[in-house]
Image 1 (cartoon, rainbow, N blue to C red):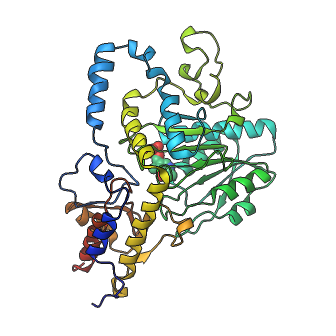
Image 2: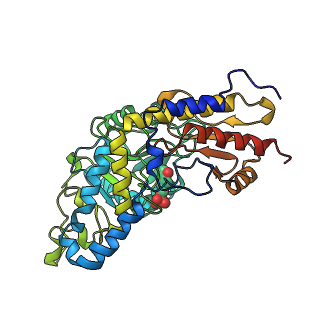
Length: 417
Ligand SMILES: *Cc1c(COP(=O)(O)O)cnc(C)c1O
């Protein structure tokens, strides 16, 4: 089969690595024995080197020796301390608006419930949650649960799975009945970057609040939650923030929504109470964003989150985004040069402004191809029905690694099916 002359060569990829201002970062991760190309940083980021030692230090010193005294010696404030770090490095959020707690799913539930209950309390006719059909399953299922619990209606935006939610679609869906709009900043499948500023403004003009899901944007694309007038956001810390499997998630709540008597998250545990150790009768929310906390903070799980987010801060999100676009540019150039007979389609936006950190390719045989790739240490992921996702995390991925991974994808497709 003939190649288009513009197909990037392996030497081109090596040249991109040589010119990469972030070239030192891949060596700052735990080595991944037997891995040829890790292309799934958007699903589970790699551990930063030193993570194992930091966890061991927590176990041996803080937990093992200081024991319960460690709560007073620091642990108690970690949810807001690590939250502020995530806010600063990944969300464009001034200190005091972000916490780290729970799983993404649980935080989504808590924040969505708090926002809709507030809206309904203030405007009883606002009984709709607007969301899109291609949002991540947990976002859709949590919304269904909240709607059933509170007698609300879901208003669905039908999204193009190759693109994502547009401001025009949001403008057409919001109105005097809208309580909350729930959108992923970067779509988990296509990688579409929603126009977060315009969508927020449009929703606000209609009197709605917006909850942003930052799972695929935090640590990958710049987020300016404060500048864009965001109300609230919830996202994962184990994807581009390298916080480790099941790491506690982050939630952002804008200052203007703090301490409102009508805005209460539903899981009223003792750790989100004002002065929890007074053990008093009756729940009174802690001031500020701390009220989003429910129970004892997941301290062990926050150790890797700290290291991951500190690394992001050292690199800077703008440099990360610039490399991310160079990585996906390379991948698109490679795939575009594949013979049409191979039958691979790109199911992600091409324009930089709308393209997130990952790409989805489509082919009917990708399920079995992914299984074979995993066996040879090339690790993208498969998303039903026929999508191969490539999430080259800029801090841990070399251009040549991406090139080698794509060469393996092509090789597996060219084998007899
Ligand atoms: C990964 C992801 C989740 C995961 O939620 P968990 O509670 O951590 O399992 C939720 N929403 C989106 C958009 C995601 O990409």
